[in-house]
Length: 556
Image 1 (cartoon, rainbow, N blue to C red):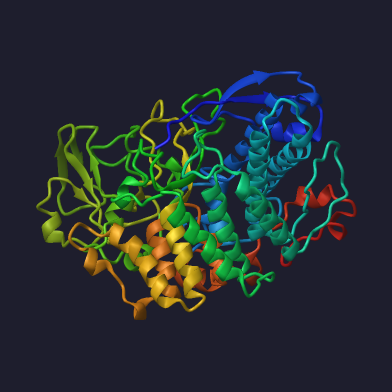
Image 2: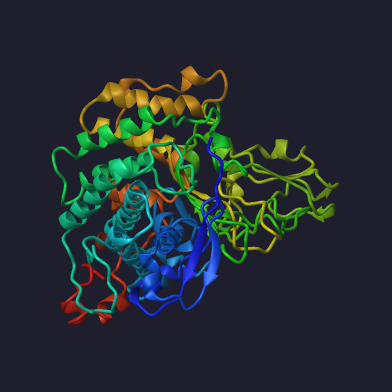
């Protein structure tokens, strides 16, 4: 495995449209080490060091999406796998009520920050040919990385909003001359960027400069682009075949491998591992980590006011934003005998960090509980343990009948006990954006859609065998007659729960409306137009002609 190498990551402050992108530059441990420089002129980007710093600033735009509340709300809320917990101001994104409109702060922030990143990429791409002091291979690689980031940002935006303003050259002065491109034009530009980038990116599982885009990362992304394009209005007959070729190459040509144990993929301290294809970099340095990776707070239940417990860094700061649906708990994770992923995904035991004697609350099969430091205080078995058995336990047992918007199984993938203190919001863990298990599942989906049932079955079985408890590998295998889209949908939920995938998956499959209505009873306001997000009102207001020049999506 490649070791982490630091690079200078400079924040540049200057008066141009590019400054908006560059001023997002914030350090990422392993890739970036910030050096703040003020009053640097526009010509700095025309130097070798300036070009590199500009590219690093473009990378920072990925932090607008991965590990943020906005990125999670866009992808976790309003799906079939998660509904809302007790707290938070954005529950309307799960309800799909009229409060979710074009004034939505998340919509505005994502739009602005991704476009700032895109313009920074445009500047790097446009200026790189004239920068002196760069070896030709380094120049080509930096341009390829910028095209990877630009394609990534446009891909997310296209999935959320449809055809949008397609800018492929640097904007150095503000302009209100914008227009909405077709979805077909968006995909053509995304595909062109990635196809041009792939030959010049490092052909390695992980860059020697960890955190930079590599060839397998671009191929994984391009495979997913083709798979998504196939079900869009821009779909072509060869999309699935092209996706299959790319995804197969990621699996077979770069030495990337599945970890033996599913739970190890997201184990704290193991963020750099052989399964990771691309991750977004965060840091423990408070000066350069901006708002940090915040995913650690959103998926946790209210453990910290329960008998025998108080908040600590080990168990996290529980924001109670996202609660698993009954579908997730009872269907997706129904198999607890053969499949390790329920235990690998959810926290099942809380050990007392606040010893003493307490009256019980949610488990009233006993009147009081007494704990020494480190005793089990809460057990979350995931099934309805009989009251007679619970009564024999010297701790509280949280069973499904007692689940609420405050008490539910906590997702442990993103927990961050490395935070400086128990209140710190700015987490420092890298966010794993692409990993090999997803590549296998995307490949299986592409093969299934081409009626290659045997091949698709084997690729799903690769994931299922890895997920098996030792000795249960054969029990986890499926046969070809079990291989269908329902299997793909359930396997992606089991494997990728809470990894900012589900809303985009449901949209790609054309099943968002159907499955959310079926499995998320809180989504009472869901309407047909919710398959797209609203164009932010500030974008429409600053366009020439306003909505006539930059139309809002239908229904918003």
